[in-house]
Amino acid sequence: MNPEKDFAPLTPNIVRALNDKLYEKRKVAALEIEKLVREFVAQNNTVQIKHVIQTLSQEFALSQHPHSRKGGLIGLAACSIALGKDSGLYLKELIEPVLTCFNDADSRLRYYACEALYNIVKVARGAVLPHFNVLFDGLSKLAADPDPNVKSGSELLDRLLKDIVTESNKFDLVGFIPLLRERIYSNNQYARQFIISWILVLESVPDINLLDYLPEILDGLFQILGDNGKEIRKMCEVVLGEFLKEIKKNPSSVKFAEMANILVIHCQTTDDLIQLTAMCWMREFIQLAGRVMLPYSSGILTAVLPCLAYDDRKKSIKEVANVCNQSLMKLVTPEDDEPDEPKPVVQKQAEPNPDDSSAKQEGAASGGPDGSCDSSFSSGISVFPPASTERAPVTLHLDGIVQVLSCHLSNMAIGMMTRIAVLKWLYHLYIKTPRKMFRHTDSLFPTLLQTLSDESDEVILKDLEVLAEIASSPAGQMDDPGPLDGPDLRVSHSELQVPTPGRAGLLKTPGTKGLECSPSTPTMNSYFYKFMINLLKRFSSERKLLEVRGGFIIRSAPAAAGCEEQPVPDQGPVRPAHAAAPEQRLPAALPPAPVRAQPRAAADGRRCEGSPQVTESRLPEHRLRRAAAAL
Image (cartoon, rainbow, N blue to C red; front, side, top):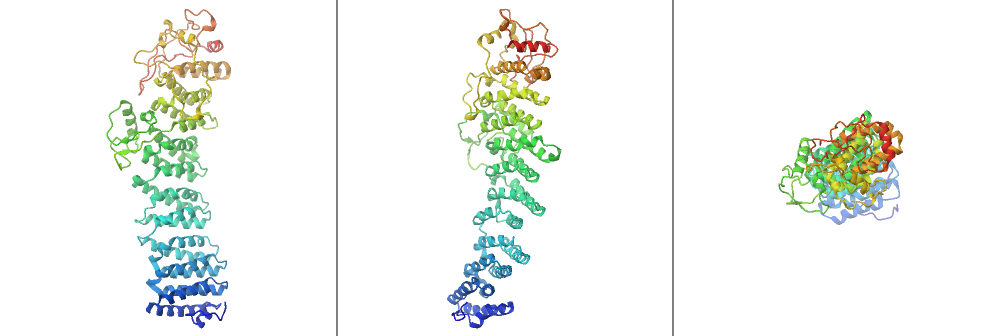
């Protein structure tokens, strides 16, 4: 520093003391500066006040000499004390040089910077809030400082700033959120602890509604939840728990849709705590938001289905995942089978519908959030109060759901409980949305047939239930089910050949009137024949399947189709009266004339009386082999 330079209004003695290496001499100089600035305040001499602050900032605090920087810091603090309530007029000039010293390589100087800023903030109080972001940014860096003295000083400053925020109603949350969103992804444990402590403080202030901005920081919170430090994880659990309480209290103000994908991602993590917490959030979201979550069904199922196969080591996650799965399934209703063209949904009492009534009763019995699965919440109890007389409808996207279900079903490495859940989903979709589901049947059918080779009897039984529903559904009677919902779901029909007209005509002979349904019972559709022919083909090509599972499949198929078995006389291979050649024989799995089946008492009342009834005792294995060979 040039000793001959003019630093007026600072006297040469003050300048000399500010540059001294001894703290006591610098402190004496600070007292002289405080006295000088008080005189300027009394005279209302703002020009001289600004000149003193500028000199201390440029010539001292930002000097290349370490002792000069220390003198400049203590001098700026003295100016703030002298200005008192008027310090708010000069805060930018006072704060900026001090914050610059936060990055100094000398730990002692960083500590003096903390001390100086503490004094400036203590005097200014609420006036520092417009500068909160720069203060927070500086403090977040010092929170991870390796020097314990600096860290201790930053903690004192941090507590002071928190007190000011909680007692003020002028905090700019909108301006702060971008900085918080950026800093929340820090990997430093001390910085993370600093961030979490501030979120807790802001969440506790009644005038600050942090819930509106939760989508901005939720992902970062789940990242911090995976920290190696137990204390930080515990703090983060508390924060997430407080947010979840707020969500339950004020569901109408929650942006569920904006956070759905965040939860889907963290429900698939390998960290048990993160996965369990995210799954608990997902459960609450599905139950509180209802059909708002339907567009995210494919992602939710991707996260939830694998968890259903967890063992007792992850029992808690498995139980919560099961609730999520069941709650999501109940949101699918017959109205989702309507055409995809969206129409405004009027918020009024709908006309009673026989198909919808059973679904609503099921939703009410299950303890759903609104006692109904109807997307318009027309039961009279709405989760969200309507803002107008119309609400945008929620569309169920079957493309992604079917892809997820098919992928999980074809993956034999996935656990049995997951495959059972997948089959339950397929059955549910065929019951609630048969017209749309039949667009995907050709792509699902080979996988369903392949699942008959599963090692689990329960999986096979559920698989047969789905196949029976496909074979008997009136939606399958359409000649052209329409184009598939997605371009990726087209498959070859070579494996699913419908019987030739000649063979199909054999089924309408007087000797097979058991396959003809009464006017009150729908006929079996083309998938019934596809199923029987492909099943026998598999028995023919896979002898092990025939020997190991053939009897079980044949015994279980009638029960899955909802028909009661009737005694079948052993009359040898079925051969219609006009069949002239052996190659025209029907497969042995098709029943002879005396077979009479009764429809089961099902909720939807859509089971065919003509489902094939075969018992293992009436259809020996050698006859199955002969029937398969005849194909």
